[in-house]
Length: 224
Image (cartoon, rainbow, N blue to C red):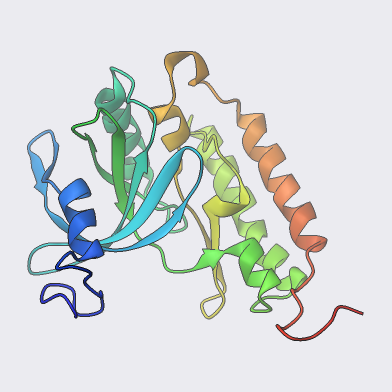
C-alpha cells in the first residue's frame, strides 16, 4: 500500500517511513525572523556523527535543499556561530561552495543545518563507479584548490576536507564543496579552531586517493 502524501513510499501497517521522517525532522525551522517548512524526500547518507537528508522547501518555488542533523548536542552558541558563518559565506557566494541557509536545534538538543543542494556524488564514488577516470577527477579537484586559497584569504576555513564533502557532477564537469565551515559551527568549543593547513592537507590527500583509485569490477566478474 502506498502513502497518499509520498506516492513512492510503501506504507507498512498504515505507517509511511517518509511521513515518520517528517514528523521527526520537519518541524518549522526558525533562525532569526526566517521560518522554513520542508518535506523530507530521502536519506542522502550518514556517518557516526550525523545524518543527511534531501528535503524540499514548501511553497511556490519548492527548492531542493540538503538537511544535516548531528547526533551530539548543539553547543550553547551554535546559532550565533551559524549566523556568523552564514554572513561570511553569503558575502563571498562562490558557485562551487554550497551555502548554508538556515539552522535550528531540535527537541533533543541536536543541531541541524539546511544548505543549498548541489547535484552530484562523492568524487571518489564517481571514480569507483566508472563515471570518471582518475585523471578527470583530479582535473575537477584542481579548481577547488584555488577556491580554498581564496577562502583562506578571507579568513574562512572549511575544516572538514574529506572525500564525502567533495562531490562531482560528471555531466557539467564541476566539483562542489559541501559543509564549508560547519565542522566548527557544530563542534564543542575546545574543537572549534581548525587550521587552514588542514584544508590544504585534506585536498592533497584527496588528490592522492583519487589518483590511486581503481574502478570496482562489474558484479559477477572475478578480479584477475
